[in-house]
Amino acid sequence: SILQILPLERATLNRDLLVERIEALAALGRLAELKEMLLTTEYSVLPQTYQHMYLAVVRSRLGESIAAANEWQRALDVAATTDTLLALAEYAQKNGPPRIVDEALERAITKQPGLRSAYVWRLHLLENIGPTEEARDVAVEMIGLWPEDIATQMHEIYLRLLLTSSKAEAKAAEQEAERLRPMIPTEGVARSTIALARLKEGRAAAAREVLSDSVDQPPAASVSWPVYAAVLAANGWKD
Image 1: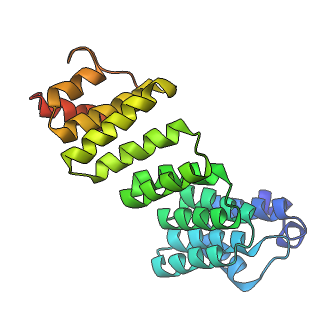
Image 2: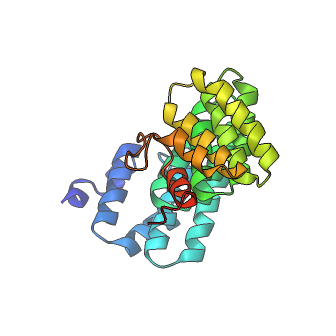
């Protein structure tokens, strides 16, 4: 087996080999052994952040939820570089709590303010997990850094509309979206934003018109399906 070929003494000489041994123990379900291995020794070839995040997953699988949460926090606290923070965010997105992903991305952005990929990642994450206010704050910050980014400007209008109940604000947002619409390559995003604005204004029929020509003709895949469903419901097509 891989564990016989790769005893611990040999694995600790190289980071890739150590990770391979860790993954082999996890795959075999030898979690207690893996927990002991990660708890008792710090391995010079493995960054502390990695050791804590691997341990977090092991402890979670063993049912030690509080200890696992503590390990995630330790992984975050000892992540000293942007690359390590991004690696932690990627691993946590697959195996851990969204809060750790968000905090790792936020810290990566603090260390490297122009890191666009981290901004985009965090924006989409916050859209999925909330709160919407924080997602909009990220969009506003991105517009400050990249003022020519029309797609993010449209994105910010969409998020702003989700947060407002004012018909006047919705009308102003619709006018902004209409102005930007010819400049944005993804037509569905613009149409979704305009439809949402019209829906907030109480103009349900006009909202449907901007999404598709008829109720029997679904809009393009790039259109927001929650907005489309809300528009159909507002027009009486509850099913």
